Length: 147
Image (cartoon, rainbow, N blue to C red; front, side, top):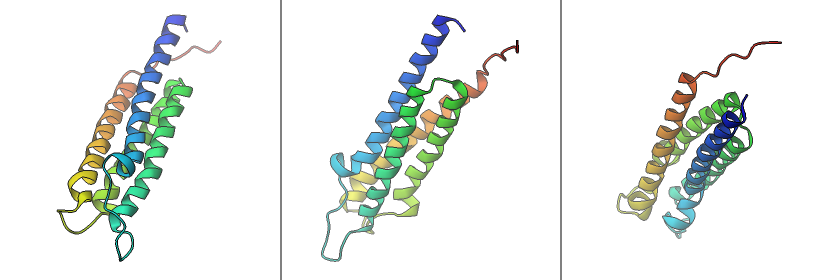
């Protein structure tokens, strides 16, 4: 493999991994700091609090997958990491919308701000990872000859 090809592959891994890390951290930290969910009430924590807690774990997992994409530059490993990112983004999309949910009233802060933001972030990551997976599959690496 030539030096130029190796550098291009590393640069591509860094760019893709950085985008995945940024979106993962936004999914993890967004409901905590940027677009907060509803506050603790007299009856305890609302459903949206638990959705935000689940998104912390999913977002950090996605960020860790992005970090692995930077560390490992092999295309087959990165393909596996991107497929994992795609599947994790489906779960990140499902948590606030289907799996855990949020407050019942559509006028609540979680329904007006936090969940739409999480939905947009998850869909962007879903589309991004699907496009990159498709590109990786179409661009099959040349078969190396055994010596």
